[in-house]
Image (cartoon, rainbow, N blue to C red):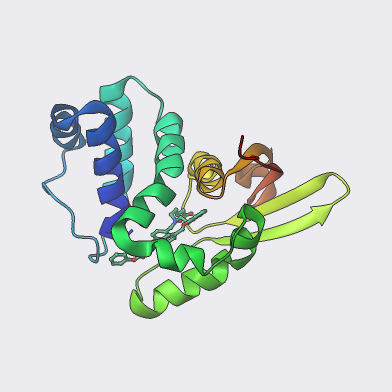
Length: 184
Ligand code: 1MF
């Protein structure tokens, strides 16, 4: 994945746990790199190694780290200069998700090595379903965090329940309940 992702992991760890924790994590991960370049594409293994090392160092599960990463991602990308890209893609979580594949297509014009997942919304009698398809394995917990983080960004409360799993169903499906948070 592009270095932007690894930088987000670094930024999250440093801001919540400090530089020393980050140094330990890099050492535990066995990676040679000390810093990441946003626009360089790295092997996915780099990200997985960082996540596993962070889990070990911080006493969390890898799933908890992925979820925390997901919650952090939108905030991070806004700060890194992608706020306009996000703003142009919608004003609510639902609008944004409906536009996300198009947004990734636009990003991929500039960054051709991007391998974006696909998100598809479906309204059913059981509620609003989000279909998540990815080349990458094991990232469903990250998607749960991404949805919560998007909620914070748009002042909405997003309740996420995974109702189908890739292992049995071929791809992950989440049921969403979204409520606008009204200003007090
Ligand atoms: O292949 C990739 O390198 C890659 C990197 C990031 C693919 C996707 C993404 C974004 N995605 C991360 C989880 C991927 C999980 C998977 O592969 O199954 C998050 C997508 C997402 C989901 C829900 C809500 C918001 C989301 O993201 C919004 C977003 C997505 C992409 C960018 C910014 C915000 C982005 C912008 C520029 C990029 C890369 C991604 O490229 C850069 C950036 C700086 C310098 C060079 C390239």
